[in-house]
Image (cartoon, rainbow, N blue to C red; front, side, top):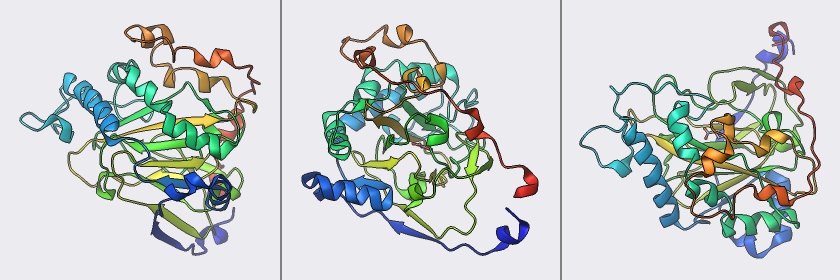
Length: 313
Ligand SMILES: O=C(O)CCC(=O)C(=O)O
């Protein structure tokens, strides 16, 4: 890319999600909508009380590490600005010991398998749904060290088939000021985009010169779900609050008949081995469930994460 190309103006605007709940009764319409925009947005797809219950468990983890401001209501998730030991790792907002405590929560893993999510994805795939074992929680404490997630495509990290969909959902109401997720309409049709190094989760920012940019976002409520294709460009909106922790989860799904990269079946960032994650669980139903599938493994391609040489920017 030349300097001249870089200096060409790009058009960027912001739109608000339309609700796609009615398409749950129209599978072909649902697939058409995803094919057109690269994302779907469902208001209240999950019961808010289940989301709130998981939120409670995760803010308790924050409290255990001393990150909740004294004298505040736990469920408000208000961080103590003077608290220490928050050096985040792996784009999840908190250090490995706290993240390990979240990964141990059976309810966190179970949420990814919620029948409302799996039924929606089964309509989208018109096939069986494989829930990736790797499941991510983000405890985005508004500290300088927690930069917003840069605009990126999940495929370069997840790999395997491109027919992987992410479900992103906040654990509680998440107005724009708290920093929800924004997706770039139609960007799943741009192919794999070049990247530059960036701050924030993943450490890669797509290069979007000359792309007409329609960023779509909303004030999320507990129970809302955003679903997007592995090539759909997305980013987090900056958390403009001084002290509110943005809690969210992101889970991934694909048809089991398509190739998968083995990292999708290990604990996120290898924070703990499965045996330790499963140690306190009540049920074995969702332990090692992917072993029931005959999966087609695809090698990881590190070149997808290579940054553009700066002379080309
Ligand atoms: O929640 C975030 O900040 C990032 C989420 C994300 O990039 C994803 O779900 O793929």
